[in-house]
Length: 149
Image (cartoon, rainbow, N blue to C red; front, side):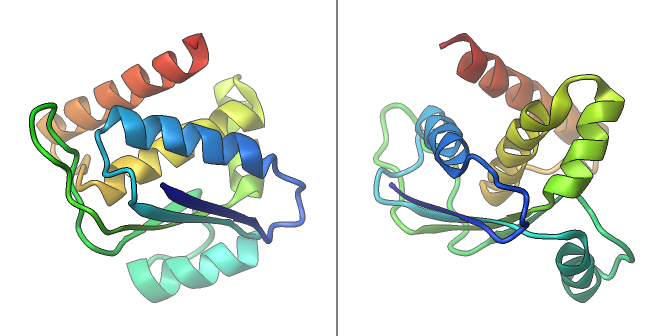
């Protein structure tokens, strides 16, 4: 897998940690071993501009997901599709606030947002109650597996 993590946020992120988490999540979701993912951490102004440009929403957000080749999770007995999974844009400043509010800190929040973003890149959504249960249940399972290894 090609996983590139770029820290343009000025916050000194542990890019190796986020890359390892991403690899774990992609492996667990049976994403093709040659799939590509780019994660970019940015400041609040940058993510606010992207949020307005692409989502037509005002202000900074925590994570934006931009799927490329519409890859989907693989199946155990099926060869996964090769391609570019897509790009994630994270905002560590927003993650820090949310992590503090949730009581689990910035790193745990960045792990959650990265996992959440990868699931969006794989086609998961949470607009409807059933989708929400499925996506957040899977997100919780993946994070528990990551943290228990």
